[in-house]
Every structure is written in structure tokens, then in C-alpha cells.
Image (cartoon, rainbow, N blue to C red; front, side, top):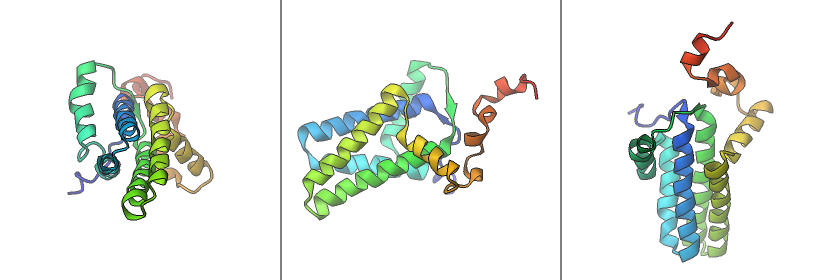
Length: 170
């Protein structure tokens, strides 16, 4: 059970950006069609990815098992904790959109929250700029998130694959 509810560390940035592209599509479709039912898979996907990385996420499974391998792109490992934090922000915003629309009838608030997710996911997918990861780094610098949560976030040498570290001088 512990393996089911674990988040990968490191994360393949190629897959993370492709998942973000899927989120862009879902958010764009949600806003274009104004179909509130699309808020449900959006929120589910974020919550699933926070809990288990790609394991319980249909989009995560599609990306990691089909799309990324089909692309044949070299893996680009990045620290997992900041990506999980970013997924947590998405889970919070998308769950708030679900509550805003279905519980409080505040549809405009729901669409605004989805638009915020759309902007963040577009930056991640198109430019590799992860707002949640930047916020995570800031919180680490401020001491809100302890250093031991992500050693690789402080030691840049831990971000390189082990093979390239092996030949590096000490």
C-alpha cells in the first residue's frame, strides 16, 4: 500500500511537461465549453497525482506508459518534491473550483480558478517554468519547508544522473 501512495523522486521532466500539456487541453476544453462536469476529472487528476504520481492518474498513465516512451526523448530527472507540491496547488485550485461551482453556485469563481490552472500548466508545458516549483524553492529558502524534504533542491550535483556524477571530480 505504501508503494501505491508514493510520489516518484526523481521525476522525468519530459513526462511532467507532457502531463501539464494534457492539463492545458482539459482546462481549455472546460473553459471553451463551459461544461462544469469537466471540473471533476480535472480535480481527480490532480488529487490522484499528489497521492501517487502517475499511478492513479489516467493522464499520468497515458503519458508515462505511452506518450513519453513513443517520443524516445532522453529522460530528464528533476526533484520530485517540488513537482508534488505543484500538483498539490493544482489539486487545491481544481478542488476549490469544484466546490465553488457545485456547492456554492459560484461558477465565475470556478472558471477563474481553472484559468489560473491553465496559465500555470501552459508555462510548465511550453516553457518548463513551474510556478509551484518556484514557490517550493522560496518556501525552502524561508525555512518553511525543511531542507531534508528535498536534498537535491539544495545540492545541484544531486540533480544530474548518477552516471554523470560518477566521473565528476570530488
